[in-house]
Every structure is written in C-alpha cells, then in structure tokens.
Length: 116
Image 1 (cartoon, rainbow, N blue to C red):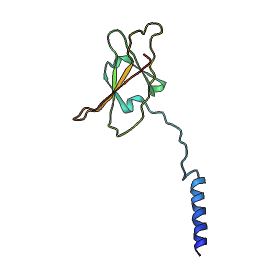
Image 2 (cartoon, rainbow, N blue to C red):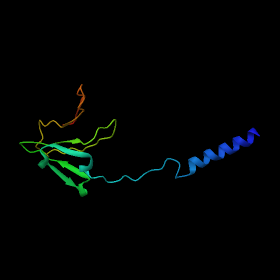
Image 3 (cartoon, rainbow, N blue to C red):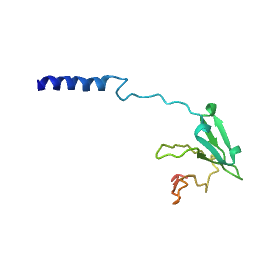
Image 4 (cartoon, rainbow, N blue to C red):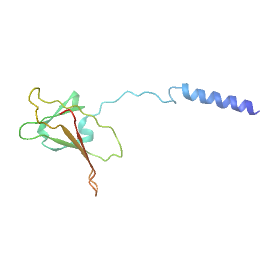
C-alpha cells in the first residue's frame, strides 16, 4: 500500500513541475507609465517622457538638473539607469545618483560611477 501512495505522490509532483499554469512561468513585463509610481521632486521641466510615458529622460544644463521620488514606500526593489555624458566635454564630471529614505536615521546610499 505504501508503494501505491508513493507513486501517486510522485505523479502529482511531476504534474506540478510540468503544468505551466501551476509551475513557475515567465511573465511578459507590462508597461507602466512613469507618473504612476514617481513624481518630480524638483525641476520638473528637466524631465522628458518617452515611449508613451513609460520612460523618462533627465536633463542637466549649466543651471540645474532634476530629481524624482517614488509615490510610495518599498521594502525592496530594482532600479536601473543609463547615464550619457557629453562626448569630448565631460572632463571633471562626476556621475552619481542617490537613493535615500525619509526615516529618522535618513538612510542614504550614493552610487558613483568609477568610469567618470
């Protein structure tokens, strides 16, 4: 009788691994407008929205840059960016971005590109 239950359990486990609706499946990323999760914190005129609002370009001129912040709080997440400098005219430019929280301890992380 024990062998019978072991076989049934084995078949059920195989079904879980090979059934795409139950097992781990790859999901197609969805496009979410930038303004749904983020709001400009200063110099909003230096933000250009692309791809139907799903992407944002931040502009830096000789007077100002810009900043944005999330509308909600997150325990964890993923953040990526691409930085482009002016070709042939970026000597002395330090590329960096800051990630911080508004907590009593003001946790701040600074990410500086070593290739600037």
